[in-house]
Image (tube, rainbow, N blue to C red; front, side, top):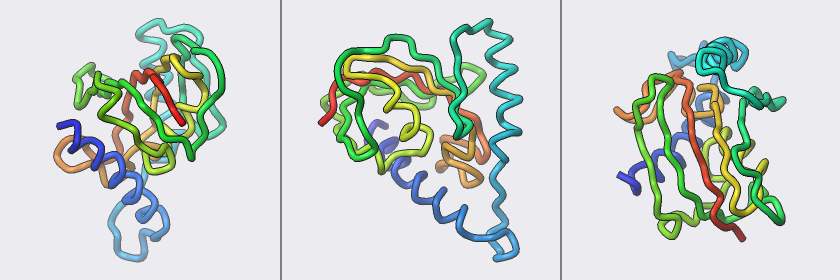
Length: 162
């Protein structure tokens, strides 16, 4: 499952990039939900769960720094070692990994929401990412695991990076 999710994260990113470069008139039949529309869904979730200290990035990503960590910040070219849990707004977990040694991914190869959010914490930090579908897997989704145009939540601990 962990290897499958890594492949899905990378494949989803590249699929999103390809789908965004084609116009709907080009016959893709795929339309990403605008980030602004997902913002209403995310804001409703935040209000319903009475979450505090949730911020919105200019990209449309919402995030909540749970523990800032210490030291330097990673960049999109960093190789990251993380622990994470990915889940839907209904609380159902679709993937998780608590073995940071099995990660070691280059941040730029992962979904845009992670590229924006993970550099907001330092080594040892934890963050909750509220990922609009366009910054996740977009209108294509990810196989049978993540439906198209789905808002995702991730709890991420940045164990290490280089």
